[in-house]
Structure formats: structure tokens, C-alpha cells
Image 1 (cartoon, rainbow, N blue to C red):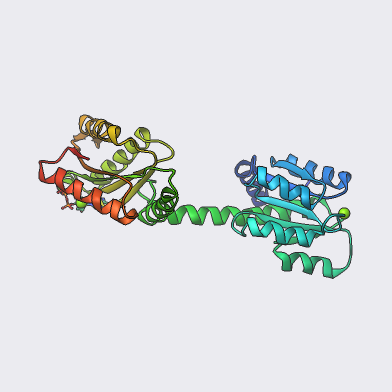
Image 2 (spheres, rainbow, N blue to C red; image 1 turned 180 degrees about the horizontal axis):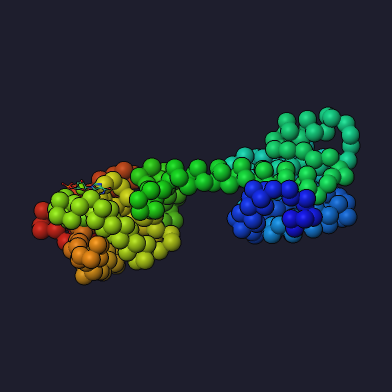
Length: 315
Ligand code: GH3
Ligand code: MG
Ligand code: MG
Ligand code: MG
């Protein structure tokens, strides 16, 4: 690739390799009424590992988007029989925000108004046809880099740094959203509030690093035990919350008690020492009046587990 693109420095090559890895399989849509032009763009995008879809016009592109809603890059011609590229861009932008997808307009017309029209409709960039492969790659790559940066920022804003679990902000946002759809009658939400027992002692006896290792270990057991659809969150210091959809109330106790037993049975190894660890849990199964009420209910049940001696589950 590199020679073909005339890469002159190592940094460019390093960036290129990083992009090839990260952007592999990223869904790209090429819209052009000329099959030849589509094939040319496809060839370039294929070579960089994108998963390319083609549409011969605006209507077809919009239909395709329904089947492939996670298109992240669209390369759009201006002059097409059914609608022009700017009109299509406007329609695409109703569904794909600037954080979701990059749109690049392409046209053979020298007229500046074409590019302005694209940009005003919500395109990120514009390339004149015929274009050099290098320019095409550079513009595509920069726009996709921007999307990836959005993704990284979103990820950082939603994750707890120590454990990699969802953070409290993400838990509340997702919880409220799930609660709204639950009201429409599809889901049965449950919240399990968990608090490590005598965690202050762990820090005091083994040190803060050991405490952190226990938190990470606990998070990894959570990730193993629970499903992809469950929201696993670090609620605060040594408090965690598992938000589940479709929790069977008859099974809730067994599920969380098995988890509790696993935590208690496996001391955490840190610095050659075994650190005992246990957790108290309160599980509230919905429906409740609202997400915050559900959390409050699980917190009260957790308090009961603590009061009754810790290392136990109350449903
Ligand atoms: P209980 O069984 O009643 O929950 O007792 P506890 O000692 O766990 O409760 P307490 O709330 O008094 O102590 C929580 C401790 O968790 C205090 C705090 O220093 C520690 N902690 C909070 N966040 C972190 C962290 O990120 N790392 C470490 N190592 N410790 C933390
Ligand atoms: Mg055309
Ligand atoms: Mg606590
Ligand atoms: Mg505690």
C-alpha cells in the first residue's frame, strides 16, 4: 500500500497501520449513479479493509440504511437522477449524527456551489472528481479518525477507569432509558446493589493497592458471571450495581447468591498474599415507580443484608 500512496515518512506509515487495524470491517456506503465510479471508490475502500455497500441513487441508499443502520462512512456523488447528493446528505443526517457517520461528497463539477451545497447539508468533506487515490484516502482517513475520537471520548465518559465497568453516569442514563421502554411493557428490570464487606479493613490491612486489586478482581467476576445485556456498573468506591432486563423474580435470589458464594470462595491473590473478600447484595425486581425508586429499593435490601451479618443476598 505504502509505496502506492507515496508515503514519505514513518509516522504516516504508523498511522496507516493503526487505521488499518481499527477500521477493519467498518461499514462504508458508496452512492453514485455511475457503476464505474462506484467500482472505483469500492476498490479504494476495499483495499483499506472497509466493508463496502453500494447504492445507485438516493432512494436505494436510504433503503439500504434501514438494513444497515450502522453505516459509519458515506461517499456520495452529487448528480444522480432521483435526488442530488446534497438532498441525500440532508436525509441521511436525520438518521446519522456527526458522531455516528462521516459523509463525503464527490462531484465532477468544477462549480464551487456543489461543495457548499454538500457542506451546508451536513457533509463533512468534499472531493472533486477525478480524484487521486491519495487524496481520497487522506480525506476518508481524517474523517474516520474524527469518528473514532468521538467514540473514544464517549467510551471514556461512560467507563470507570479502575475496573472498566460502566460508571455511575452511564448506569443512570441507561437505567432511565430502559425504564422508559419497560413502561411500554417489554422488560422486567431488576437492580442489584452490592457493597464489599469491611472493605476499609482490606485497605488498612493490605494497603490501598491491594484494595484496588480486589476491586478489579470483583469486577472481573461480575463480567464472567453476568450477561452481555446486563449493565455492570461501579456505583461508587466499593459499591457496584447490576441492572438486568428480563429478570425472573423466582430466580433472582439463586443467581445473585451463586455470585456471592463465588466471591467469598475465592480469595484475591495480591503480592503473594491471599485477601479474603465478601459482598452483601440487595436485589429489587421491578416494575417500580421509576429507575431511581428501583435503586432505592435495592439499596434498602442491601442495608438489610449488612444488618443481618453481611456476605448475604436479600431479595
Ligand atoms: P461495610 O461492610 O459496612 O460496607 O464496611 P466497609 O469498610 O466496606 O465500608 P466503608 O464505607 O466504611 O468503607 C469503604 C472503603 O472503601 C473506604 C474507602 O477508603 C474504600 N475505597 C473507596 N474507593 C476505593 C478505591 O478506589 N480503592 C481503594 N483501594 N479503596 C477504596
Ligand atoms: Mg452522477
Ligand atoms: Mg460502602
Ligand atoms: Mg463496604
